[in-house]
Image (tube, rainbow, N blue to C red):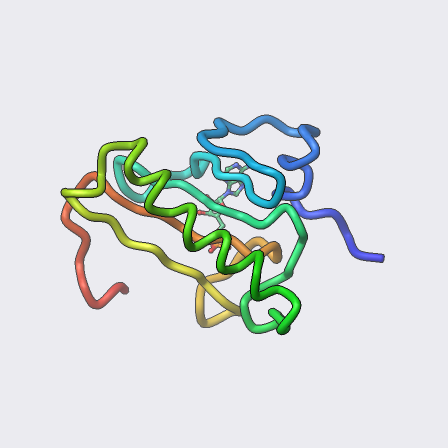
Length: 115
Ligand code: AMP
């Protein structure tokens, strides 16, 4: 048994989110505190806590998530201008929600290295 995360509640429509893409395995919605003009979170509906806990049987859903990114980027018109994908993991990684999520940031030039 696990405590239901805020993202699992978004999957189950228990709390609202601005959803931009959904299929049987994945959900993508706008980050509530955007760090760029476009800031999306792409999550597996299956609640994998973090990338450090992904196992071999998660390979297909993780591959599915990554291959949704060009579709979503095309839809949002950021294929040519570019974007960044980020997965924060654990305390030093800046993870705050223990449900694996891919940040997709776009709409301005992004600095490197990140802070
Ligand atoms: P991380 O720090 O990598 O775990 O990212 C968690 C992200 O979830 C942060 O960018 C938050 O702004 C975002 N977030 C938290 N709660 C919500 C919510 N209810 N709807 C949308 N985004 C959220």
